[in-house]
Amino acid sequence: MQNGSRRADIKTGFLGQSALGWANVPTQCINYASCHDNYCFYDKLVNSVYNNGEYHTRYENLVAMNKLSAAIVMTAQGVPFFLGGEEFCRSKDGIENSFDKPRESNQIDWTNLLSFGDVTEYYRGLMKIRDSFAAFTDCTAITANNITSVDGLPKGVAAYIIPNTESGAWNKVCVAFNGTDDDQNISLSGDWVQLADENVAGLNNLGTRSGNVSVKAHSAAILCDKEGYKQAGISDYEGQVIINYFDSDSKDKLGTDVLADTYTSMYDVYKAASKHNYDVKSVDGDEKGQFEEQLHKVNVYVKPYKGKMCVVTVKFVDDINGLELADDYLIRNRVGSKYYTPDLPSIPGYALVMDKLPENGAGVMPDHDVTVTYQYTRLTDDADKSVCKVNVIYMLEDGSVIETKTLTGQEGEQYSVQQNEYEDRSLVEVPPKVNGTFKSGEINVILNYLNKPDPMKRALVVVLIGVGVIFAACIASAVMSSVKRKNKLRAQMDFNESLEPKD
Image (cartoon, rainbow, N blue to C red; front, side, top):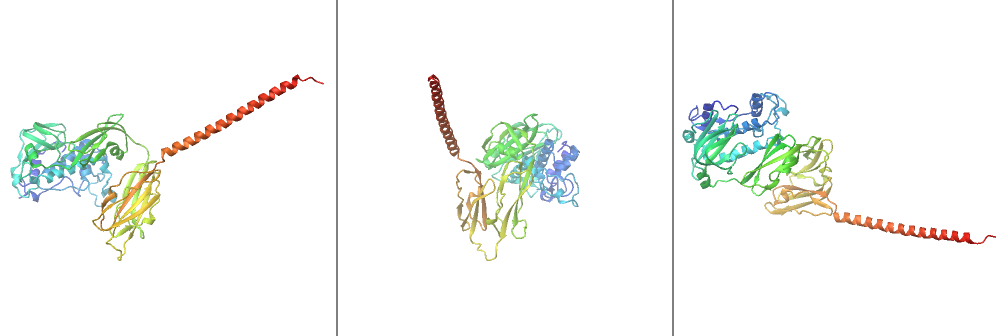
């Protein structure tokens, strides 16, 4: 991964130890880069490359090495194995043997998904590739014995051609691994379709390659033959968008997102940037669009927000003993910004207490952490479990409940939640569970609303105030005119009096 050495050992492992090693068949070999013993993989990389103790810092070269390692494990003969969290660069703060360390050292930090989400998507793409080519999972030694090495490779590069073992699939796959610090080229005969590069992996066509194929530093390239790709008709159902974030002042690269969703679903780079607490200054590429088979790339120039952040913890507890019944939701946002309850889980054997909803289910983020608690009550043995429910909560942005409804039906029947319209209020967004089928137990749906005064009413108030001001001005003008006439008449009367003869 780091210097491309030990190519012979890579080949032995890549063949599942069955052709050159100790195993009779590849399934006797478990392939992994890290497990519950010893260092997390990313910690090991930090120690060996930087040795600075910065285990939670994103280093682009280490991220590349992580992806390269995953590509080797996922395309090798044998059984792949990953330590939970390796797919988003899990760290145990450099602790090698953590069996006697506290929970904080051993627990998975899910916020790593924000910093290393592109690594997670890469692992997902590799799994799709592995599932689509039976030769990767051959439980016999037939495939391993027929894998051939690509000749004429630069030092530090390994590449293999894997033949097909089933009909209706690709004819062959080429995998190339570059462990050096420089981009390298490999020479391939024929036409190939690239499925994985240094950024993304999956079943979409990243481009046709022939002759020299470039493999970036510390990365893998996975390709299948063009004819086989066309004939097999194996395709993805998700499109991908690569978002590269750069500091708007220094132009230094801050990180990468790889978004993936079903075709025709929409992406928004502003929403993606907000998860990292970035203020977008400019965008080079499409700000919004649809996920398609074609890979999209967008460069976003941002300013990291450095103000105070606080956390809203949403809990779901037993109304009698306070026992936590489901995982908390954590909402981390800027002080002064709005927050909403994103979703309410359905908990088997329990029902949401609709008349004890929290008063702070939505609101403005204060300058301290907040806890929002939803209570559930245990269902009694005599409760009618044949009736399915959909609880609907209409909540205003300040956390006050506008109204609640409960829909009932039989399991499998369709339901549709009415998106109520309220005067001077607008729905924030349509939640995903507004339409669906009744399920055993209950489904909870929350619709959040914003206060939105009618601009016509505001205009009417302004007009009325304006009319009042004009009317008052007219009265004042009339009064002033009357005063002036009286003063003028009085002045004339005083003048006339001065002309009368005196006694």
